[in-house]
Length: 256
Image (cartoon, rainbow, N blue to C red; front, side, top):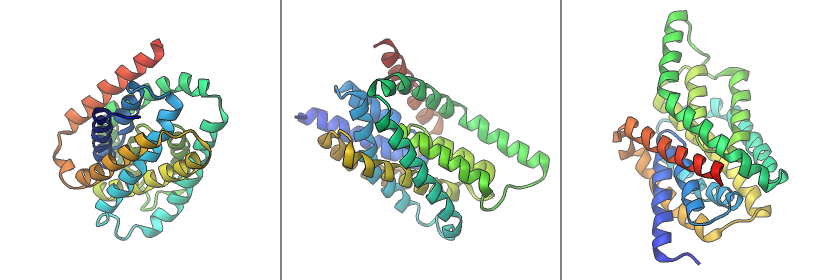
């Protein structure tokens, strides 16, 4: 049974994650450690976290509906690739031993933290290279983007922290469009990845339903916050917080 204080902590973590996911991604680096600290086993925490953050992803996508206008044709193939990747990743999580996930997840967290840290420099490099070469990426991204989304979907279905960072990097490199519009598309793709994985987990995986429902409440509110006032947050402070939390959790898991 979750006591009232724990419930508030989980809702607050969900709210923060919903906000962060809508803005940049990597909100799982807040919620997943929270569930671990509260005593949930890593596999149960990961499954419950994925399910709990789906409503927040949907909420954030709705908040970005204006930026999504006119992107239906572009999104179609990417959504299919995202769904297939999410199914693959979720299946790997369930097929591989739980001990394998416990060993792999600290490495995934460190990789996610690294991606969050280098994202500004990566974006700047992409912009500089694009201007230097004098040619723009394709409006739809092409087969390379579809493949990249599929591979990101595998990662997202398996663990998912910072998948939003990977997706926005792919989109900004391979698609010629406004960054806010790409962020809206990123939210839709991430929603599909998380949703298909969540459906599989609901059917066959161990779920801490109280925690998942509380995360869903918080993340739904956070999705709207991220789509409205969240853009006013300092990206540097937000990024620094995510990196610190992720590093602490990764070190903790490596030492267990």
